[in-house]
Image (tube, rainbow over all chains, first blue to last red; front, side, top):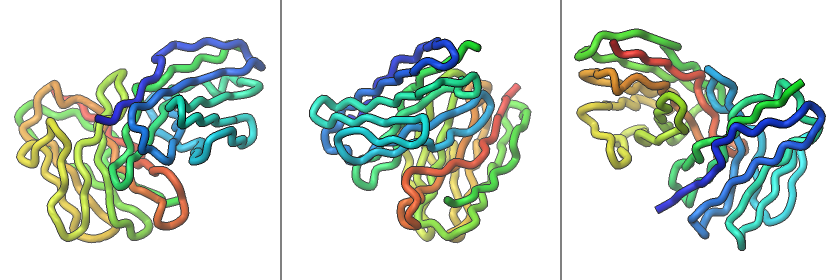
Length: 110
Length: 116
């Protein structure tokens, strides 16, 4: 059974700080991982994907993957109030549709 | 990435009635997915809709309650039948962009359903 675990938060960080969001997964066969951002009342928006162990950087966002530990994280540098949202991690297995974590609610305090 | 038009964006319905949600994609896609997001919860997959075959439903979801149509490669509908207040949720359609080089899923704007 595929499971994704996330700390539901809320996670509060001051503006300009680094926000760290974490996700663990149960399926060792997973090869790709995605981070989605969902603003209140909106649909999820893909912000990062990662397929290999290590770090992947895109602007202020860095995704980190450790397949041995079955752990994926998202770092947001220089956090802004506009980053306040729920962040969902998700992964497929083969042709299986995406399984989503429950999401972590991030609040960036100005 | 694919652009999905979903409608209606929201509706308030009487219990016992049905609502059909439509999703139109601006490109041809093999699979479309329907998710439900209950208040304060994450996304739960309802079913996968393939063109030319019956939808594949996840555990806990049945065709009689959530009939799905997929008449072509750019369009799908989800009907929520015989609604009860427990069906109040956001319903989202989604497509996999991998085949076109976009990784991850793209979502429609969602349908916020309230059953009274």
